[in-house]
Image (cartoon, rainbow, N blue to C red; front, side, top):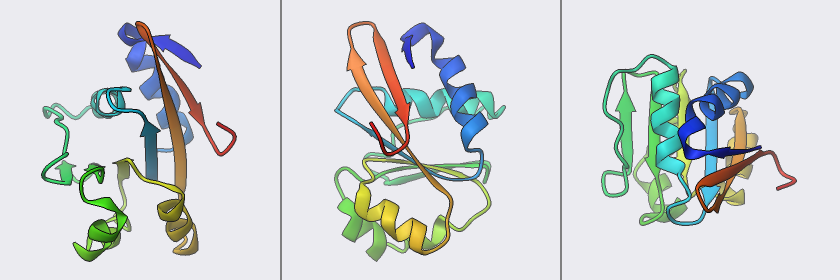
Length: 134
């Protein structure tokens, strides 16, 4: 589905209808709107907190209902070394920017629900595709 950025709230609702607990891996180029989508998801969950990119902190926790990770700088190995993989077992929605197939495989082997959302940047809108056939 492709939407103008002004309609990001409807995208968040659609995503939450597919996965409200477990891990949502967000893939897309720089500035594709991964953090913007997490902000909309937080809003849809009724979380009044200000959502910021965890690029340098790696993880942000919003009321123990939404966890937001950015592993662009650290990579999967450092994510694992920091003990953050264990955090993914918490009963919440975990949005991970820059996760890859290796992370997806680890999650599936651990029995953790995981979905992948691919975001493609187009002028004034973004296209979203959930699943492996993106």
